[in-house]
Length: 447
Image (cartoon, rainbow, N blue to C red):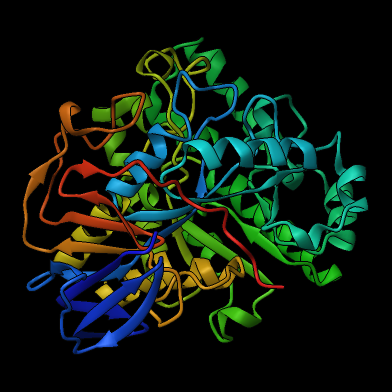
């Protein structure tokens, strides 16, 4: 690497404060934060009038590599991520093959080391078939274990639907257990009711009734009760209801929480009002729900019952999305625009820049115990994003970087623009241009 980059005069947003200073990057690390004089060998970047954030850490993505790379892969989706200010991500286990063994996890890391422009880590998958194998492992070595997406493999793989399996895992697992929290029996009963009325062509607007708020709440409450019984480290993925937010604490620091949760940006951005226009394009599991749920999630984010923001980035081809209800794949691409969405809320006066940085940068690093990431601190990895808060642009097919080449945000005009993204001190994204000569690193966790 052996290069020195000096970012001059940007407004640094970090650890609850905003202040103007220079930042010197040397050999991939943040060397100094101060008023710094330039030297002839420094690469100088003028940050005046722009805001410097720690790189965004996305704690839940589905980059589809290996095995589903017609939708996306670790190169295309990490490229989209970096252009959106995301410098690190944690990918879910529902690839082909599912990541259910240490060997498959190692193989996925090897693929990422050759393809990913951002830093990476991967959940080990856990389902009804491999739970006994997982609890025999030293699970403390993993960033986390998760069942998310594995219910697509076959019915009955959702941990939230199997108290006996949850108890076994909670009693024996030493890592974070991140689960998809819905009651499958509720969903199946609702599916049957609507199928009788509409056949295969159920309108998208009924998706949040089929995958109901009650089914989410009951599953989450049960999981939390069992986790507390065993003092397990439980993380509820992609919370979608206002009711669920009241099951979480905000009276202790994140470092002390055993039960944590997240909101995915789409559940803050869309509501059931958007189904008529966007249809299956906003079909997610758990579902986009009501305006009241959307507002309740934002409030819980602001008052710290919700700990982090993720994207649950899940690309499918447009053909896969536009099929009738039961054939339409759930999920959509979001990683390129998540920070812009949150900055739009800032522009509307709904959230501060400092809170955005806390939930998208600091807290993911704390929650997942990442070593030397998530903060603008001397000695930390130089994962940074430089943002212009007064630069309008519109999402369109020709500026999408996802392999699937569509977005539910097409036509949306944002008032902010990510200008530059640094990954481990490398200027990987620079005003639309990419430096792909250096790849991201595997995220290390603290011992």
